[in-house]
Length: 626
Image (cartoon, rainbow, N blue to C red; front, side, top):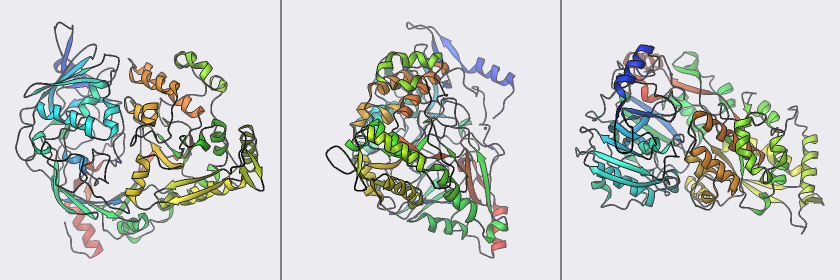
């Protein structure tokens, strides 16, 4: 299961008796020709769901939170936005469009992977998980008042998997048939029952209105106001500059247990900034209300402002209990220069993380050495029995050292003297057929090694520059290309038109079908997939499928660790760093629940505190605009 797009900013305790009673009430069994059929309010990937059918709220929500007020957020994108359709591989969609639509079911933020009925009042599936039927709530409505039906669900699935971004086709590849059994029942049938996740992820489908889209061009990126069914709708749009969402007062799902204490703010506004430095200054000036700080330097030095000292602009660090994923310099292995594993390993030796962490990031970060960092899914030093059983059939296709030693990322003393690592890099490059001639690293034909590192955020320029300087010591002509135009950058990503990028592969506690889009050979050859590296390896393909068909949490962990180990030994990335905390700054106008979800504080559960806001305005000597 992927993690959400950009996408969201950023856990609940019930007595054992409540859980047991709810489980007895909430899950029924009935006989059918196919055997036992489960009928329930929710479904878990493995084991039982956390919340019983009788639950009244999520642990990280405050059902007594008042409604009202407004929050202003910032989006940093030099090109702004030009589309309100986030489902297609065109345009730059506006921030927040996910709030316009409801899905069949929804996950919680304090479980590895469970789905609770949202549009669906109950879910029905057999033990072998070869199909699932969603029973829609009769009260579910689109914003124009028309009922949401099974036909809308079927229409949406077919629309997204034929005209939407390629991710949808990879994600739902094993869905063989979608049937509208009647107005309120929709059935998804699967290729087989091996893919346990399918019964959950089809519930993530955002349901679009057939009567709206069947007369429109779904593939066009434009600013036409969309019709949704979710808690918010678009109030106003300033093309490329700002978008305002307003809470739907008669939202059909406002009283559901999933939504109690949620969606409290009457308006959510996103203002667009071309530059992150300008955005930070705008926060301190009170131009918007909330910022997740990604720069260690900023966090350490840039918040020495009167508003912070007066505790009007507050700061906090919140623990995260989710995998950090992988961020780093991604090699595009479609390029000849990066196809040799030894070359990729050698270039890893040119990145001096310790120096960058000390001099650029105030020693705030930890080096990332797993694609599933900060979780039990990360491969340990050596493969244990369960993981080894998955790897052994591919022994001849894998590096011998994969079975006997872990990947150890190069280290330095942080002084900037990276001589030993560069010497080892030179040795590896020589083994791969490269040598230095007149200060230039050349291949057997005399062609110099030269490539471009494409970045879209100036915050990464100092880190990239230090990497480039070490590459030059190896005789490599590496250049930085900062592409400020968001549309151009996205187009180059979509067509894999780059040598190296700063990429990111986000992960969840329950990886599954989305891994096909990240790593498989088919994705490598499909524009707009997330296989930015271009990996085409039958071993990786096989391990991804084993991960997807895992029948238990233990099987999933073993398969994910095996995949992680193979990816790390492929040296496909020069790994960056991670932080298991969210650094958040916000103006003291809001209340928030005492318990935060595993993903950190989420404004979906915040509320506007009129008294606090008035006190802030009084101390600033400014008239309230709330």
